[in-house]
Amino acid sequence: MALEIKENMLLAPYTIYKIGGPARFFAEAASGDDIRYALEFATNRALPFVIMGAGSNMLVSDGGFDGVAIRINGGEVRVDPPADGERLVCDAGVMMARAVLAAAKAGFGGFEWGIGVPGTIGGSVRGNAGCFGGEMRDVLESAEIFDVSQNSKFKIQNSECSFGYRDSIFKKHPEWIILSATLRLKSGDADAIQQEVQRITMERLGKQDIGTKCCGCIFKNTAWEREDTDREKLTMQFPELAAFVNQSHIPTSFLLDRAGLKGTRMGSAVISPKHANFFINEGTASAEDVRKLIERAKEEVHKKFGVLIEEEIQYVGF
Ligand SMILES: Cc1cc2nc3c(=O)[nH]c(=O)nc-3n(C[C@H](O)[C@H](O)[C@H](O)COP(=O)(O)OP(=O)(O)OC[C@H]3O[C@@H](n4cnc5c(N)ncnc54)[C@H](O)[C@@H]3O)c2cc1C
Image 1 (cartoon, helix red, strand yellow):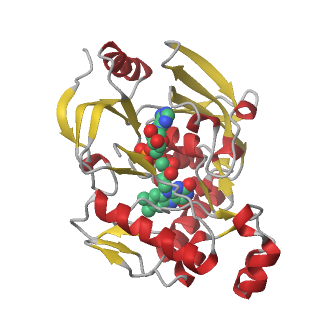
Image 2: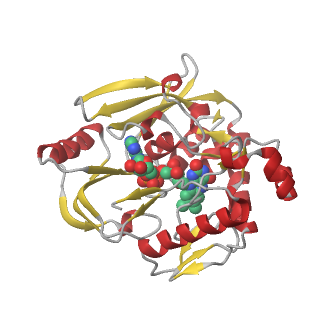
Image 3: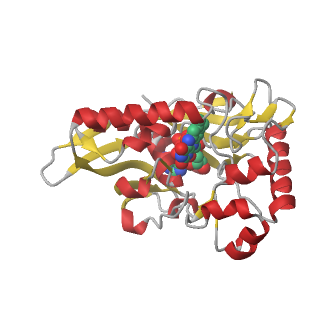
């Protein structure tokens, strides 16, 4: 059966923020064939498209998206027979938690940290998502890509993905759609792996606003070694930053906190009192409220530290 393409669909329900206006066209696709069909629908009509995963790292404008929104959701997780190493093959729309639990069940370790990322495999490869000391570049072996500009598929190896902190080659190639990913994991004790997954879940519950309408960290952590983050100059002026000199980045939540931003609000969008890099929709916040809060936070951090912080979230329809 041909994939159903709906018209004029509100995107808010498909984002964790529950914010965003309608897409002119909307399709939900799990398989590679359906994804290609939806992309062809867009190209045949010369319409722009946007790919959505779980919508856990995006802010959709109040005006929505004047094109085709393709939500990649669901699909298969397959444990490859360990002839030569332990592999998990996941379709792009598989949620990270589902993949982590499948790995744990199979006794594959090294991916426990992924339980902390409420997104899909596809979105997480693109953003090189990570937490608790792990990131996608540590576990990805290869990914299957559909190149919209060439109308063809290809396989990309980890070494070709130009992974960096919350960065990858896919951010420079919006025409490359991730269809599936093969993760290379390590054999371990299934019970110990499951316990580690639980430990991480509990720790996360204590520190973050889980279950609220937000999209994780709004801003990336801030790399040292930029023009505006000279270690020596900054730590002389702000001795409290010395605690981070041996790390590659300054936690942006620290900068936001010290700029006094916790609890700041714009309409019904508020900076979490628990974690200053989480901006929460208390119920009826608009994308405009969140955007204004982001601008305010950037200004205040710049005023206090002279540092320009950069968004991690992806804007759609702005
Ligand atoms: C409570 C909470 C906690 C979070 N904690 C973390 C954390 O600890 N670490 C972390 O890194 N992130 C975290 N995040 C952010 C988010 O979960 C990750 O960035 C996640 O990887 C995004 O995946 P997604 O499927 O939701 O992508 P979406 O938000 O749907 O999309 C993000 C971007 O990826 C693109 N995209 C999605 N799927 C594909 C695909 N198949 N092919 C090509 N492009 C695609 C989209 O077009 C968009 O530009 C958190 C979010 C929340 C709400």
